[in-house]
Image (cartoon, rainbow, N blue to C red; front, side, top):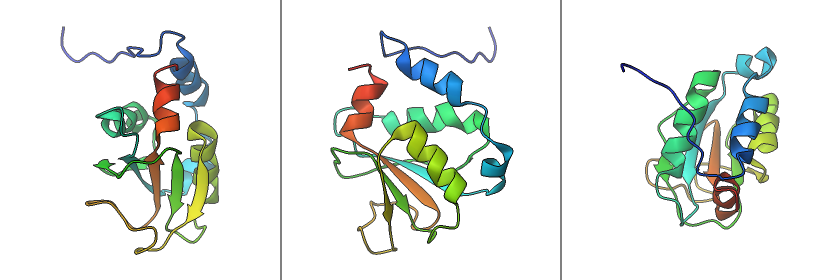
Length: 135
């Protein structure tokens, strides 16, 4: 069959696929910020969520770094290490993932092992994992 790309829903309502398709065309001004983005899995109930989200969003033009595991977080957080340098990207990420934007420094909140401390890190919380699964 060769190289095949497909969307296989874990969500029986298909709401995540609909959200993805509705968001896939990101404004070129947002992509032009070239914000370094990393996803960290803080869901505690969905192993590999960070990898799946990175793979899902890689083709749409965001500057994605390798994902990492993160300590558990009930809520999705968008850690802004840039001091506000990437407002359009931050706004798009908040619109897609929900969550609260947190002004972060390299030491606060304490980063997970392998986590970048520049650009933007999206800590995928338990709340996002439930939405991803349609619960």
